[in-house]
Length: 559
Ligand SMILES: [Zn+2]
Image (tube, rainbow, N blue to C red; front, side, top):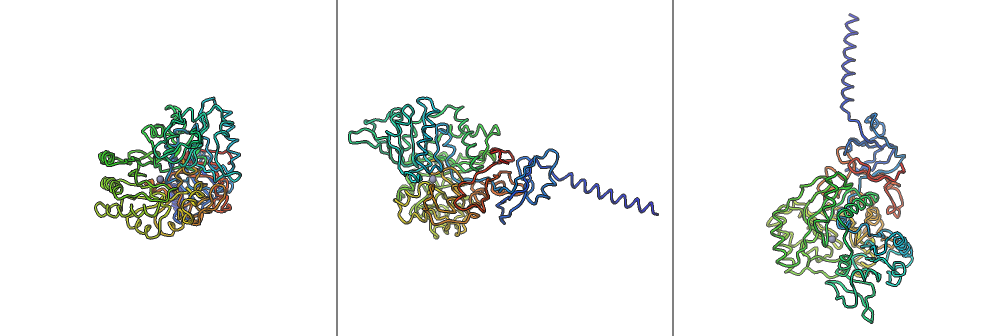
């Protein structure tokens, strides 16, 4: 009897042991585990965890150290965070980085540089490292007002002294460019050159170009003079640009294309994505900028052939934007609205065709009058072909009011709002007066309850660093420290708007934007705690490690 009982006990224990073992066998072994951290998950409850486990491309668990430790095996790489903060990889909902790759090897970026003296030193260093004739350019991303020591531009004589043998172009915002004599010569710009469309070549009393070329058309005219790289260089530029962005904390962005975009601009990204070597997730919208009825007719013939979502989670087209019809595209530094009825009619033809095709559309809209004009057309289109399920969005919305936000909500629309006053804030106050304090109205948009996200609009009209955008939304201070915006939001609201909310703009909310089981392992280990550093220091936060799809794509070797 005893032996029978013992046998039964043994049998039960055996079953229990086997059950325990099979349960354990079903638990996956992580490839990479981060422990002892402050994991800011940005999930729906904004939960904070200690550890995260990654297998392959995805997160398999987030939680307490001891629970995550159970997923560790012989092959698991373990990284002790020693208290470091971790946040989801940052997603920019509006950037022009595909275009930015073309000249990246020639660009001397001034993102965040607050001293004019420092710029001159940077230029002298660049010249020393360059061959005679090499171009040195800065295609936007800065303004004179960000220099705290001497807020002014760069006269031709000064540039000539530092760079006698290299063409130099320093483009401020998308507003004007400073050239040296070598650049004027290389660009064949002299006293006989007529003003380009929408631009002005500044000339002295004797008719000689001063080196300053003004307005959007002038800036584009100058940028087009800079020689394009060959295919190999372009691909290397793309790798370098993505690496630079990874180092600032960007892992995903929605690319709005831009002026002068061609198939070549997309080639290097497609090439790297196909090789599995694109270290960021790049989603993009098709851009055409017809400027008259005939050009609209041609685009209308193209729309029924559009097929978004044929790519993968590293490179994919998601729809159409940001400028539908060129004549109604507004500019932030011009107060007047240019939404003439006959032009809005062309815009409506395009928008209706895009709705009929069922495509996502993002439109660039800034001032109050333009927002009204677009909403009126969209409301009419919605009666003909409902757009509510298509996630249409407006980008920028610098002057949106409560009533307009309500109208957007009724149409199922969402809002992309940007940190452009970081470098344009002082200029915006000159153009728009006191209204500029509320441009863009982050607080109003947040409180309206509309789905919305943060982005930059980099690289020409603002800096690319996402921590500058987060810092701006929280402090309202431009690069250099001057306060220009009073519609600030909390740092938690800003982080949600730069991560989880932006995942919806790229149609990947199930995969991106928060640190949760099942989502892609896109995350940043930071050199400071985003939730507790002084607000003015948010802009200075840097990743010490950036992970995209479980791969370490940037490592400052500080862990
Ligand atoms: Zn825009």
